[in-house]
Every structure is written in C-alpha cells, then in structure tokens.
Length: 465
Image 1 (cartoon, rainbow, N blue to C red):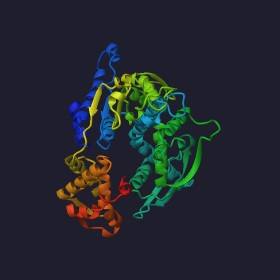
Image 2 (image 1 turned 90 degrees about the vertical axis):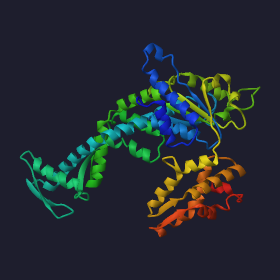
Image 3 (image 1 turned 180 degrees about the horizontal axis):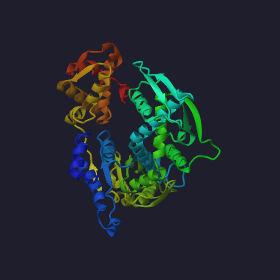
Image 4 (image 1 turned 45 degrees about the horizontal axis):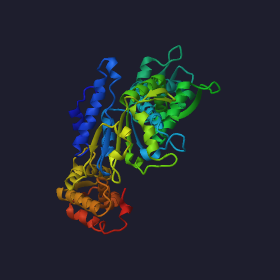
C-alpha cells in the first residue's frame, strides 16, 4: 500500500470493473489519504478521519464489486453487511457494534492464513526430518542395519544407525532423496501427534465453511494452551503421504505465535479496516410518531457513533473505529440520499453516483476484465477438453439480449449477463464430457438459437442466478 498511488489503484480496479471512473477515483483518494495520515506528526494524526464514501446507483452497476476489489488490492480486513439486518440497540436482532466484532474476526483469520503460509516451507522441512526419523526407527526394528526397498525402481536402502541409535548422515540423505522422489508415499509409519496442535485445525475448518466468529473462537482456544487433563501426544499409524500432511500442519502451528497473530490483526483492523454497508437506503422510511423506530431511523442513530469513531470491547480487547473506512451503498430507487438523517449523511462527505450500464458496457464486461465471464466459461470447459471461442458478434448478441431483458423486466444490471451466459452455455455444460476435443464457436446465431425464448418466457426468474 505504501507504494500505491491513486492512479495505480484506479488502474488495478479497472482490470476487474468496467466504467464507474468517478467512484474508482473517489475510493483511491480515500485509501491514499489514510496512508498519508500515518506519515504526519502524532499530534495531527488523531485529527484526520477517513473520508467515508456513499455509493448511489442501480443494482448490478458494480457497487459491491468495487468495494470488495478495493479491499483486495490493499490487502485490508474487509466486511460486507446489509443495513437491513440490524435493529436498534435493546431490541431482538443484531446491533451495529457486531460490525466491529465481525471485522476483527475476519482480520484474525486473514493474518493467521498469511502467517501459516509463510511458515509452510520451514514446516515442510521439519516434517520431512521427523518422517525420516520415524522411517529409520521402524525399518531398523532394533538392529543396527536394516534394508528396505523403495516403491518405484526397486532400489534398496541400508539403514545404518550410530551407536546412539540414530541414523547416520548418509542414511538420512538417502532417505530424504527417496522421499523427494515420492518413492515411499504408501509406506505405513507410526508417528506421534501432538494433541494440542490437533486442536489447531483452523485452516481446515475454514475450508469446511465455519464462519469468522467460530474460527475466532478456535484461535482463542489455541492461545490458552492445552488442557491439563489431555495427554500430550498420541500414536497414529498412517502412510507417509498422510504423515507429511499431518506433521507439516503440526510444525506450522508450532512456529506461529498466536498472540502476535491477534495483535497484528487488531492493528490492521483499526488502521486499514474497510466496512461495506449495503442497502443503506432500506433504513429510510416513514417517520414513526409514536414509540421508537427500530427498523430505520433508530439504526441510523446507532450507526452514527460507530462511523464517527467509538470504542468497542471485543474478545481480542478494545477496538477503536476512528480510522476504519466505511463505504455505504444503496439504489435509492424509492428515496433519495437526503432522506437519510442529516447527521449520518454528513459522515459520508464523498457521494458518488453510479450510472446504469449501457449495451457497450455489457460487451466490455464480457471480455475486458481479468475475470470476465467469457474467460471463466472458457477455462471451465477447457477442463473437459473443449475449446470455446466467442466471436465479436456473439459477444455483442449476449450483451444486446441482456440489455433488452433489463428493459422489459427488472433492471438487474450486469447480473443479467449471468442469465444469458448460463442459458447460452447450458447444452455445452451438460454434454461437455461427450464432446472432448471439439472446437466450439459461439457466434450471434449460436446465442440466438439458445436464448430466443427467454424474452418471451414469463418464468424468466427461473434462470436468474
């Protein structure tokens, strides 16, 4: 981030997002101003607050994508929430302070993954050394010499042990070569597994779909250490390839200092955190004359101190929201930004209007971004051996069909492209395995043949992804 200029951020965003240059510029400036603040004297840093941003525009115009990509570019802790899920403090529902709790949880998970990746290479080396020791102990079986054959090539290896019962340097080197060549992958060995480290399966739990709060609970347990009633280690018999995975994870967990992970996550959250609050226009409604409004203005009042800067107590300690960048967005189709409370609206000095996407924009979205839909489908079907070519007239027809459908039905912006693309590629997706090796050209006629009934179909919502 220290080397990124506003122009560089805009260029990077343009690799994924078509148009909306005004919004890109506003976000880039807001991010760079946060970094500039850190270079000021301490007495001035506290006076500068983030220039929060309000996106106003139709659905499918890129508001969420822009916020998400911005956080990815600067590697910042990021949280997306819907304003409509909150209720005023004191009522059943989630209060706005949970935003900070979830943001720091996401930061902890992010930092943990980064540290785990950094430690992976050293952990693999340590795991290999342990596997060599286990193999030598098992193959020696109490004698000073033993012989084993590798699984490929049939070569034999003499296990020579020193007087102290440890394998010689030459033996370890030869065993390491066999492991590097994956010639002992199915050899079953008995290993010692640390019960404390076994509980530290955060990376695995992430893949299994646990949310940030559950993962944060696991990390908290790690920092507490093992329970006294648990045995330190247990023995397991596993193949070498499974032992490598288990021991690498165990060594990586030992290399990590979880207190440092949490400390760094807290700093990143306070200094670089980005919160994207969508559907802010849903908080605008008729004023309640009797009683308290828990669905609209009440939530706006609760958001005020959070966005302005307040202290929140989390499981990782005290968090301050003073320098977190808040980006909000709404379609404002039934209202206008000025309908928000003046105090809240004033906390978003940068207000950017997103324009509706034209047919030309749709064409660019299909081909220009790094993650363009056409490139995604080409890559997916290439795994089945299909070579897909989208012609310019085919791309134009897809964009034209999306624009027509947006006019005739609900305008969902670029999301309509998913509808057209899915219908266009439906047959290929279904028969891909039977058509391996074919070269398929998707031109205008190909698109029309497979999507001609969509506009007339009253059940069009069935195809919306």
